[in-house]
Image (cartoon, rainbow over all chains, first blue to last red):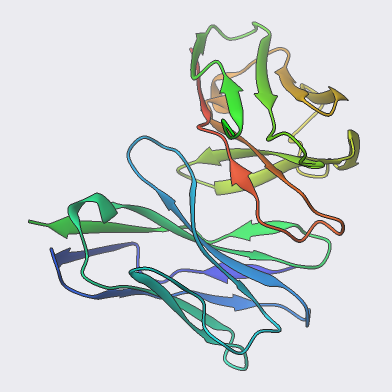
Length: 113
Length: 115
């Protein structure tokens, strides 16, 4: 079975700073997808960014980018120029093999004004 | 597209009552997932449908839980009888996936409270 570990239960940064959320995973699969989902206080689960394991290039979506290290099984999320609206729970998720989507426990990110 | 639609958004019921949660996936998606989120256990996959057929229900906690997908645009998750430990947020997600690996889009969730 796959496991996803987010080692930072909570992080707090000042507005406009850059913040990196860490995520590691364990799998024996060679073909898989990785995701970061954002869950604001509204509880909606919003897709932030997605990475295919076969792609060497790190995915980027505006202020959000990932550092995907396949050999190290690491998938960190970098948020540049952080904004108050980025305050949310962030979940790292893995999809591959028979177990479907596996989520980490989440990191609560707080952006301070 | 309106995205994944779930109803109700909030449900408060008493122990022993039947609860039915509803989900309308994104049009054209062929896979549908039910998840449960609690503080203790995080996000857990309960059941997964592909082309309206249940593929993996190994995450369904017990026989009190059942899920159906009578057509491509509607699914239900039923709990009968409900218990206080069922209190959680239940998410429905859908995707267009030939082999289950594709981006899942989540609904807003249903917050269930069982008293």
